[in-house]
Length: 305
Image (cartoon, rainbow, N blue to C red; front, side, top):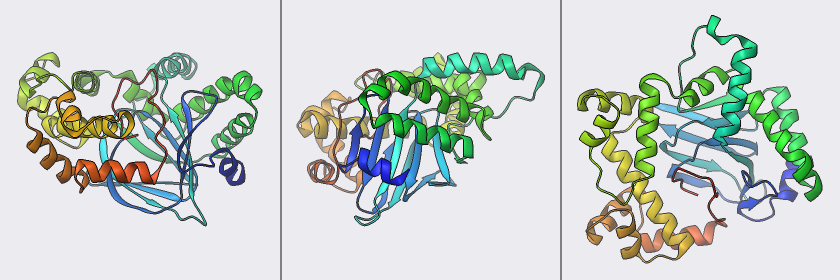
């Protein structure tokens, strides 16, 4: 599997495939703790190791563990990799329609109404089960051929979704994606934030939309994201501005204004506080470190890549 993925991902950074929602990652160097914001999706590491730090928890994803992200959450991450033994991973952008279709079938077949409801989780790491590993290998084999990618790829991605949704922590993933109860209200608030980065947003407005008092909204928001609503909004704006500069060539001033900053100096201060570098230095580092592909067409959330 490693040799196959190494061949399919020759360039450092994200390599595109014939399937829009599947990208292959290569990293030839170690990466110290850095802030990231993952779009909902699945990260399957075949070689190397990533460690995520979210709240008080640590998430290790490597050849024995995959990472599943149901809602976009900011956390810090480090990578173990080298030119001799690069990190090689598969990133599957979450197709909410496909997941919803499978969840209906799974709930019907498993008769989940008769079982305890699992606790929804915004993100978790879980062991790579043998059947999931086999499904991933078949997907990589199909990606070698443009014809097989188009003809077999979608069904193989569907199979991987099934393995994850019915895996050891599949109930938590299904509960998160079902977006019911308080978790669902916070999930919808996250969509509002990601869709309104250039607009004025405050906690009172978000709490009212969630039909919660401000203290209750704060508590549930922090339970889901491990951060406060305003810190989440600030982090998301800064991640989006960073992408606009690195991917679209925006100037610092234009990127800051695009995500709602009225003060360029405030933007630069908060950017350096989050990323540890000035906007210009961070964009130069990103361009030097890895290839940055175009954004996913159907993405509804901001991400750090």
